[in-house]
Length: 259
Image (cartoon, rainbow, N blue to C red):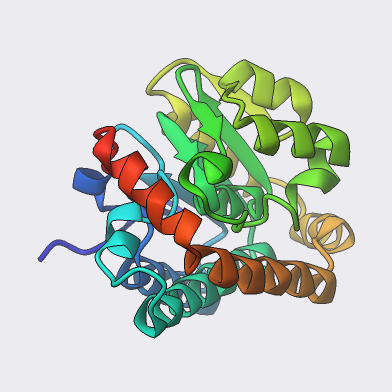
């Protein structure tokens, strides 16, 4: 089986690519475990001066794999256990990205939905390809927000905007996301990774101590972030085991969605 996270070195930059393209890089425990292992290797390698978080295939990630949730008996203890495990790993990956010793730049194309947003929000900078679309999907599928949609997004774009986007299930274009402050850079379609690599290469010429202090002073508060993500995990597990979530998953998958 192919590795779920591909690692490539480009000079002093490490490129980590989510590699579950046949499922739109939707999140499952095995992928998140592979991402955490790769991040631990980057943390321990002093030759890595920056990390680019990218993806194989057309889309960065469509969040949690709804098909994987739907494979369990609705409202069962096994479904709750799976959700606990998945969100525990997702939250750990978000916290690891946010605390990594070197800068992390996300390169995003295609769709970015659901809990995968948190992996992007945890990065220092984010480059969106022109065709990128961002949407929550929680109120459509019947899930509760996870991946920082309540714990991180309001700090970047405000509570009112965050609430409206999620309740309406609004889809943001790449240019809208940059204008709101959800992302930092806009690239031509299919050039997000190239721009992210260029930004990473520029960082290695900056004074290391200044970079480190800048990132430390602007870093997410680890305790507050962990607490917010934990609140999301508890609410998600409660909602995913409800009858309306079971109906929502059937409806979502019945409409031909695969992520």
